Image (cartoon, rainbow, N blue to C red; front, side, top):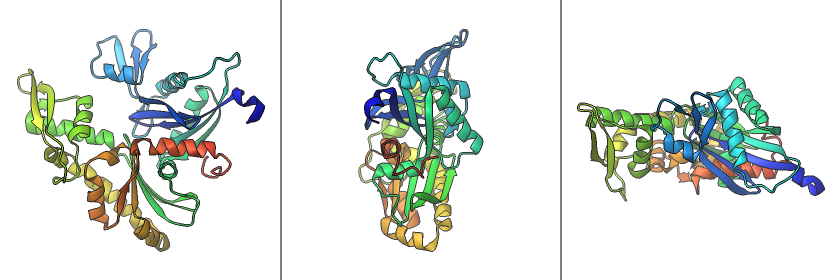
Amino acid sequence: MGLFSFLTREVAIDLGTANSIIICNDKVVVDEPSIVAIDRTTKKIIAVGKRAMQMYGKTHDNIQTIRPLRDGVIADFDMANDMIKELIKMIPTRKSIVPPALKMVICIPSGITNVEERAVRDSAEQAGAKDVRLIHEPMAAAIGIGIDVLEPVGNMIIDIGGGTSEIAVIALGGIVCNKSIRIAGDEFNQDIIEYMRKQHNIHIGERMAEKIKIEVGAAIPELDNPPEDYAVQGRDVLTGIPKELYVNYKEIAHALDKSIAKVESAVLEALAMTPPELASDIYHTGIYLAGGGSLLRGLDKRIASKTKLAVKVADDPLRAVARGTGVALKNYDKYTFLIK
């Protein structure tokens, strides 16, 4: 950008249902939960990100916590605008008389509608972006994993985020076929909440469900290195008194079984849509897993067992999409046809 580079700031955003990551100058500068806390009376923002997450499920009548994104798309347009603005303010900057113009690349789910796509673009523009481009999450994940997406070789990517699971076959810089389902991390949390209520008569919140998923979450009931049982605190459904009990990974594998089976079905559907020549490539290259959901213990083995293909989990899968978005931004000219 040369002499006037200080007048433009290039920003790559992975605007996720659970977490939003911002990359600037090849560095992750913001990694915050996608949540906003507001004052109900004045409608002013009290906190965004980690501070708002600490308030989640613990607020009184005057404070409301809102997750502006649901199922990978914007559910609350105004709150999404405010959240993006606040996240951008968190980027470390040099003081300048003229605020820099923002050039953004934002990743979006592959199954997004034109209206939902427009909402993302409008939110970014209202947050101060002068140039907004969008890239599909599976493509960003593939680039972030290190796959050369421009080659005439088929690669299958499964990106399991907070709101959606994206399954796509990529070749020659495009998505050949894809399947997007709204079963991902949030749905897993709901499964755990429901299981704890039905099996243990204990009512837990989303934050506790997320902790259980991280500590003892599993996709198969037999693990080589099983995690220790995890202490769960919640409210007894029958007495209303707080109580604690321990759960093991086998219980959570059982709780998540139906949702994971739906992800497996979507993977098989995507494979069934794949052209024969690309199917041949995938047989050799295998399947790549990205997104926070891919950290679920044994998920790679379960999908490998179902598809009879090699399954590889990306390095740092939580940030694979954000990294790929950053690479696409940095190589704007090379990937110009990938970005809308």
